[in-house]
Length: 196
Image 1: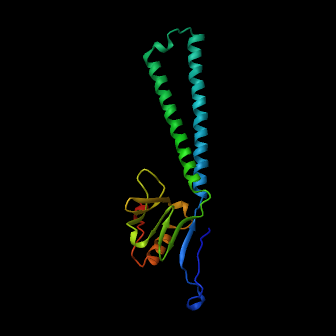
Image 2 (image 1 turned 180 degrees about the vertical axis):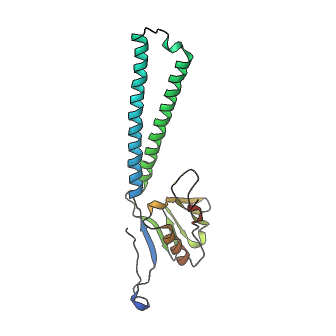
Image 3 (image 1 turned 30 degrees about the horizontal axis):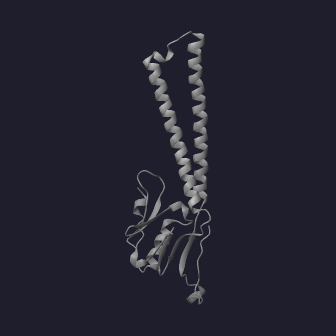
């Protein structure tokens, strides 16, 4: 875990340095892992779909060539079965591909960036959004109903920045305490919605 902390020149009583800010880099590991998992799932879908298509083609060849069925697709039930299977196959393949591409794009957006979150006496920065404390309308950590991934959300009027909680190398409670201390209790990071 790499957490950058800048220290003031003079140590406080007891020899402890004064912490002026909390600087957190992007934690890429969980996002890279999700990209790899999504890619493997997409490959598995491709493999199973290919096997199923071969089975369906085999049934068609067996019925038309060896059983002499000339009106194989004239049977409504057969036609519906093939159309439903094709639609389901395309839907599952498209969903698996979309999830993989989405995670890959999410990873590409943060690769090479140095600072994911910075909290100091002047304000807070999350992703691309940097705000003084007076302009912060809301700072929350929540888990949306459609996802298992928690995310931070910093808002100021129409401006909004989101970051997954696992993209920071510390627990949300660490960020919550830093926000409370450095903002002099002006802003609180609400983490209650993470546990739903």
